[in-house]
Image (cartoon, rainbow, N blue to C red; front, side, top):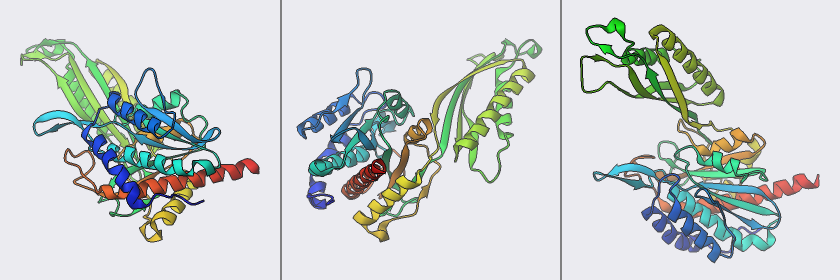
Length: 383
């Protein structure tokens, strides 16, 4: 099947104003209202019927006939960062580029639509930075019919050479805990009458260091915030709040970290006679890359960009909400395209920038992969 009629240059000319608009109008998680409206308007003008939600931002759209079996997911939200002394929304993780790639895929698929062997679903997912959007889409049934799901993410130079493309991104798992320690306040001269929340927090910090994980596994768990006490320095603090960041390269190692954290909390509670309540504010699953999806994406990279520009798979300690789709639906075959586009100084840096000229090629690669995935599902159905 011929991939496209649009040349790369023609596609780039159409995508440039799209990227500029998205870049200049960032919105944070669950507040992507104007972004959703912009995308809906674009898709309707393209003759498509985007599907939105009554209770949240984001949307999806199908191209082709029948029930969609292959899909591409892009994230939408921006980060909240201090820029030139003022906190504001900022696209420093490349989601503006990812949405641009998705719209490029749609432009290419529209030309192929009469000859597509099935239907493709494009997902515009909110709240990736909160690690909540994928869970919401799963609960809405957005991926229920899909067999293949692809994602994409711009990569820093330290991970991927500019102008190259990786067929898989092996992100790690992450959990963010927040909690409170409830002790008993007392006069500083009578510490035996109280239960010091700061001392319990210090014991918790020390206990986290003693969670044993195999040295062959990449993992860390550390306290990142602690607040306790008031303005008076002669009071034993009875309460403290904390945040804990846990990271692991695999889901199994994250399970071990979580079990160790729970044992540490129980031990500190008993030893210091305090109660400790905590919540899991975010859970980002580690990548579970499917070999067939990876093979399809690698084939697409080679056909579009050449074998010399097909890079090895990338292993990265960062987290990505995309992998919750496979975590919750193991039968879903997924992988993410790594876009080597010279991200500098780095992801989440307030002045992050990248070479936008690689976005059209990224769109072509994803389009080719989606067509190959449709052909794969068609062959499977005829067996």
